[in-house]
Image 1 (cartoon, rainbow, N blue to C red):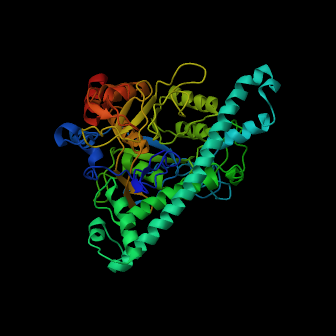
Image 2 (image 1 turned 90 degrees about the vertical axis):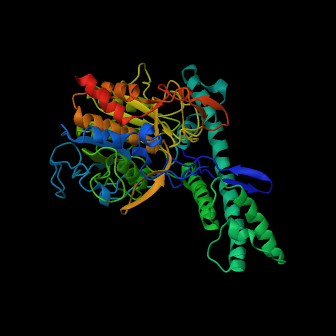
Image 3 (image 1 turned 120 degrees about the vertical axis):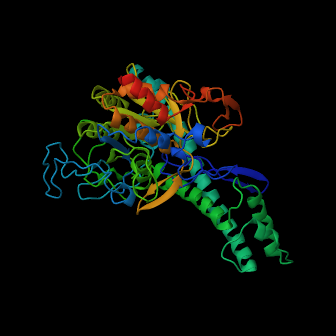
Length: 547
């Protein structure tokens, strides 16, 4: 859950807006205190370019005269992918066993006409779930039906642990729902007040937009103009990024308001349940054959951005270059604007593995997982089949563990997945801001960090924009893993993980701001390796290992 990183000074108090929804259906952008990053910074090399990128461009020079041994398939379990994007042409997986549009399951995999992947949150009539509630809300409703009228003394011994869990869920739900409602109302009022002040100044200046310097030149005896100038001067003087115009600031406030509107209307609304669109029983984990064959869906922004980082065409003159060249994206839609459901994630993993994915990118997550055992079973299946799983650590600026961030590598019973790589997000500068301030972290749970701030990539309609989040960091690692497997397909999933961790650009002793605080800590305190993914070193290590 990424943070809308703007600071607003209003009526004598700083306001920093809280978390943005669902693991980064990113409608917002990271705002840096420093210079803007180059659009291709995630491809650059720390040693040669002085930019904390992946070294992917340098890695491609290393294999320039070599032929790949394999085209690698990366499944992107996400919100959907724009199959028609100009920079992804020839980069989308095709199910060769399926005859398009004949209404028959030609390859007998259980999914009709799944030519380019599958949509587990769609209806058989071609409809889609766009928004869904948060898992906290769903757990609240599930447990409320069991325990609403019960006291601790009324609960049977075998239910006491679940009852204690219910009390925690209830408290968390009420406080979070109330906070969302208050913030929604606050940002509505904030937008209204600033918009009114902005219109007064625009009329005074006779312009459609203005900046801080324009505002400072106003001298007026009109009380309305003077009040508007005073209010807007405060907001300009406390923005994190210099040079923003009032329209840009209002846009950011609008994004925050929209975020809380979604929370109020969908995420924490106990009357909202869109699952009838799919027509399945979300608690029936044995059911796999539901959904539809449209892996794009109504809002493919997030999944398209992720896919471009991995696989955007490196040989055309359009947009960007992806990290990997010999790669295909298998789009699997399972993540709405809200929390994904465990059943859909488990089935998405099975689908990816059974249809030939070598790597699965998972840029999503949540704080509760009632169906964890089903997801664990799917993870074990992927592990057995040798598929690399790469997961975004999340954007709540918190230290994660096996009980507060899902899905994760830890199995509910015992043990952990050997094919799982957990990724935190880093910035482009080798200073105290190296660790993205929104990134989750853990010295035992996060394997490494990777570029995730102001990443320029593909968006629907053949567009391009900057987004930030561990959702962007995970696909940079997925791209590097794909680069390895294209030239060294004999590597096992556990070996890919071993190489990526052992080949990091080491920044263990580098002092950074701990995400979410002003404390300075060694970078080694935030992940297992204390380093950044490094494509160039990873290729060299793969060469040595395979020899």
